[in-house]
Length: 78
Image (tube, rainbow, N blue to C red):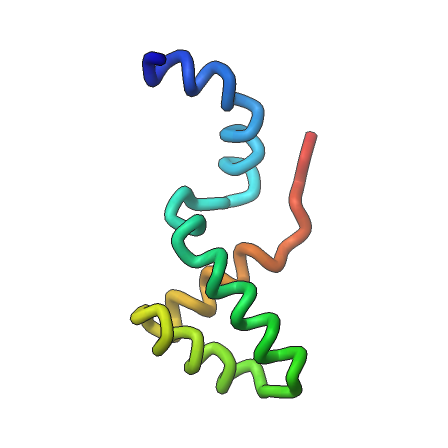
C-alpha cells in the first residue's frame, strides 16, 4: 500500500484529528491519560496526579497538562 492510499482511506479521520487539534504524538501518551484518570478518581489533587504521571512517563508536567487539556475536550465532528 502506498502512503497516498493510506491517506485516502484515512482522510475523514485525519480531518477530524486536525479540526480537534489532535496530534499524532498523542497516541504515545494515551496510557498516561488512563493513569491520570485513575489517580484523580482515587481522590488525588490535579497537580499531584499530573506530577506523578509526568514522572512515570518521563515527560514534563507542562507536556502532560497540555496533553490533558487537548484530550479532555469534546470532539468536534462535522
